[in-house]
Amino acid sequence: MSSPELLDQRILSQLCKQVERRKWATTYLFIGKELERKKALAIAFARALNCSDQPFRVSCACAICKKIEAGNHPDVKWYGADEEANSIKISEVRDFRNWLNLKSFEGKVKVFIFNQAERLTAEAQNALLKSLEEPPPGNVIVFLVPAAKSLFDTIASRATHIKVPSFSSQAIRDLLIQSGASESEAEFLARMSQGDLTRAKEALENKWFLEKNKWIDALLKNPISFLDEFHSASRDEISRVFDFLIEWTRDLLVFRATENYDSLIHLDRSELISSIASKQDFETILELFEELSQIRKSIDDYANQKLVLTQTEVLLEHFYK
Image 1: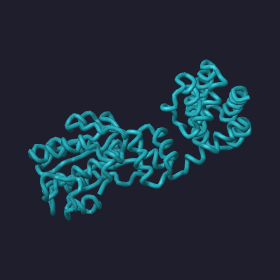
Image 2: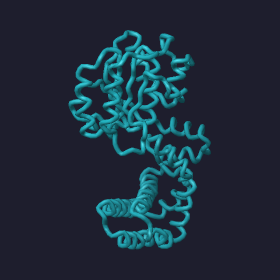
Image 3: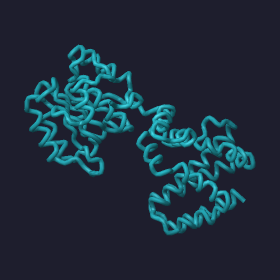
Image 4: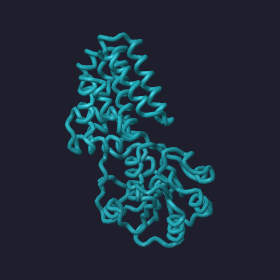
């Protein structure tokens, strides 16, 4: 079963009440930046619509719920399941339209879930319109999108909008610890990810906690040598370095202004942050933060990489001397 922490219980309760009253909508937009949470809610909703036990319980382990959870129930169809694909093409929409007009095989309601529906091509979205105008009874269509504007207005206006909130830092921290992270690692990744579980899990898999601490130590030992390592790096890697520098400098700035550890991202390096911040005035740290942010923007605008690295070496050497 989906981890309880993935589900927004308040929203699921509202959807379950619609099921109990048999007054659910035909088309939904599940809106929010956290994909894992939207997928978990879509699965739970599909289970609630088809579960043999009512009122529905998340802990239900009936045959129908097990099949839906496992992704092999014939009446629950996923489109855009390949998250590596750049788009959801019209061929998938044609398949959806064929299934839409069939009777359900085992369940009470056929459920169609469009994963990362913002990837639907213009042709695919246009092909959906007629089906959304007058879908046959006994069907529910769910689009998982970051924002309503991700789809054509003609589609979004035909759907009931459900806003799925991001995770709290505490929820992400607990989920990461369940995945094997240490407490300090989970705390850092939860703060760094800003409510994005997918980002936190990717960072955990890539051992970013260990790497970022190596970067901090190398930066403080010799800023020029640290940046020299990236002169032949890709633009994406250099962007990642600057994101790290901005995040680290942001912590120095926050601590210098508040002398409070609660808002730090790199909480595991709080004593080091306190030591560095106490040696600089607020304006000096702010100036560095603004300069780094401007350089980061210039990288997106395809500035000369070696030039911006050389410029940054001068800034950091002056700041950390």
